[in-house]
Length: 192
Image 1 (cartoon, rainbow, N blue to C red):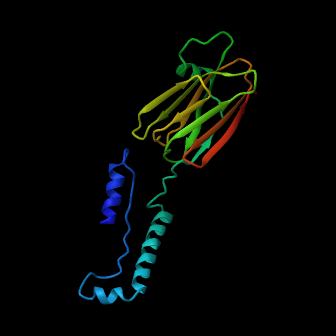
Image 2: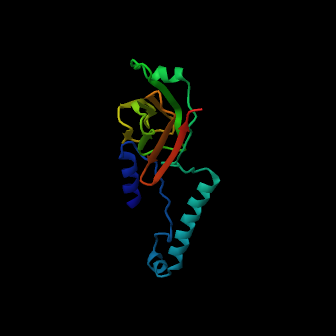
Image 3: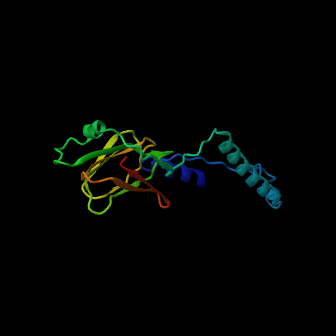
């Protein structure tokens, strides 16, 4: 009954979440059930067998971990042409286009994302555009004129691109990215 409740919750979540139930069987549910329940070792054996099975499945790769909310950052800048293909608005005289097509490289699905972009005083961000895919594979775009973008829906494991329109004096950009409640990473891009 508990297993049915767990699987129901997984399936009807939006989007559905993967789930697995491993049950430990400690008796044959026959006429000897009452007598076997008085021997506590069988419950312990059933629990150890269940844990050993799931552990071995994970270690064998047959039941891979999802690496939810795990990611790495890649501050490798893209070309101006790549940035121009995404930021099609008119660019003020002297402003610069910067892009990081794969700034965030998820190792699994992300439950959400917060991206903060910082620049030294006297320089600044004019436009921030983030391109990502949701769990259904649909491309999504968020545009902001402030240095923080929050994505509250789950994201796929595809790379997340960050595209910027900045003041021409910008020689450094600091990125702070967090996903989930505890996973936060930062990196810095410096003009060469």
